[in-house]
Image (cartoon, rainbow, N blue to C red; front, side, top):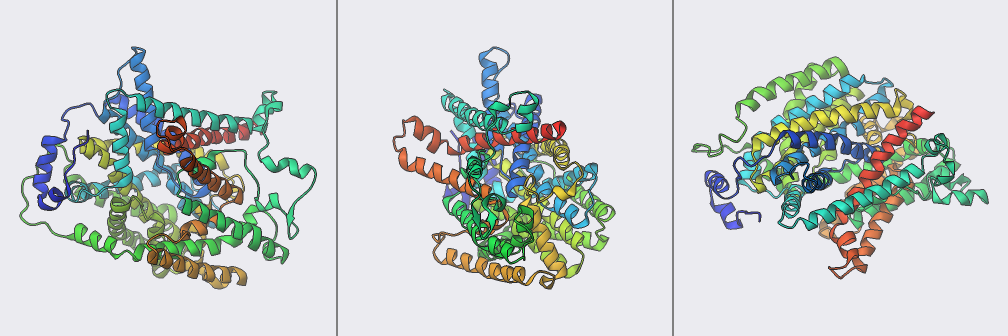
Length: 623
């Protein structure tokens, strides 16, 4: 049973009193936590599950948490080892340390969905793989150094919820209950979803099935392929399949839809419909878009889509002044009458941050100059921006569970659009610094929340997070480079859509080159999109979130392939129908599709995306 302070205690007790209460009532002392097996399990699972983020990021530009998946998998594995008398099951804190490492590894893919490929597209040059690895590792470690000094204020004193971290703590507590039946059901459900999704991906791999002389088992890549044997449906002369209007046999994106709200999913679908059914066919028929191919369409459509997402996220962010007020009140307020720290022996010592931030910050500035041509003073400007934006990001994450990485990245791009006019590469890579550092800091504090709830040692969390940084980088970076094998022209292709990188590149070009370089229709789309993003957020604010559209979702629909937008919306819709259909809480349908929706969706994503990445690599080898 998780013990927590009540609202009155949170507001009436001093920090020292709260820490003493935690030591007495929650702290589990020397219970095994960051052990050799939890570290190795976390690094292995994190490295493997980082491939799910790599796959989903390539398709959608998003990153997903892998903490729940890793918790359930490791719980089931060591439970099985215990039954087979081959080992003992993990303690609850070992499992938590393991998920912290795995989650850290999973988020290491974020730069490879945004600033890194955007830089390569702008310059036409491939960043050496070893440079990418050390660049993202340095940024992630800087995030850790910025995060831990904030832990005392945001978690110990303010007791902020950090919703996703809180949910992880509750799941861990339920998994390690006395009977463990719920945990095994979750594990079976996760593995079932993963198995079905992986099998479908294997049956879609024509080259592999042909190589093993079993082509008769192959599934079509799209269910609508049989239609084209008899007719070619078109819109204004453009075949639907060339407009990416198809029905995918893969269920990975449907699983992704299972983690979305209906509002976001339907907004994405609407954006995709407007782009691919209406605007793109008109632009193609008039010669504005040169051909009916995804890459050509997205090069036009991203301006309107990026404008909607940029103004929507920025307006939404600045329309909540309490976030900013809380940031500066809590982040910069001076503490008086400092007393002895009851947790001094288990917290990370402050000298690590006092020494580490200047050293790692200097390394970041130096590498930015040597590798990406960022002038030293522009790199130096990024460090205080990192501090302020990390405070903002952590406050937002702590209160809402949402890290406004996109909005903060755009703010950095705007700042450097003024400080370094005309320099697209500086604009991209400095935004990458602030975005990735603030993301890692927020992610670490999200991981620390369940450890605090369950009585874990903060020092172990920090060490584990750093282990995850290296595990994720060592797996995800080589795999990413293997997918495009040095051919930057594959970026934004149907195989590697990378919509996130397209948006970063587009915003940087607009800020540094100006809208005048775009086709007049793209300028008009950007202007309309910018206004639409603000209007949507105003309506959301006035209706307290009841307005049926999401600006970010609508804009994203313009840069995704329609087949992906449709698949995600269908996944959301199917889980929504399940909630309406299954009301009996004892039924299998309710337990599988309603109570454990996130577990099932995570399994579908993990199985299909990991096998999907492996199959792309194998098909490249066969080819």
